[in-house]
Image 1 (cartoon, rainbow, N blue to C red):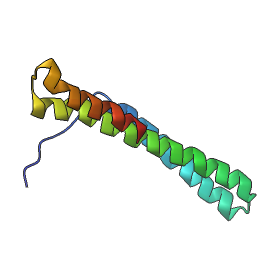
Image 2: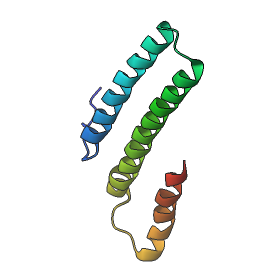
Image 3: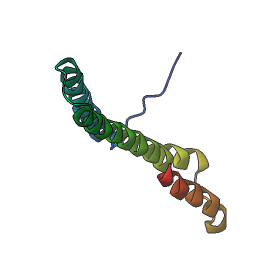
Length: 93
């Protein structure tokens, strides 16, 4: 299977964010094992969840901004409107 290597400008930022979330998640596991209060654990889980969601959102936006543009190519302004609206609405996912 021959796949094209996809590396974008935002990938190092995404990796950094996910590594931070990974370390944070390990800390949450330790909190659970230590019997910390559920409220504290839930708050920390929420923070990790947000970090992972932001990493996903950044990855998807980057893909749309670069990979989709490569496939679509240059279009007239009226033809681009649907593509631009699609890219804009995905920010609300």
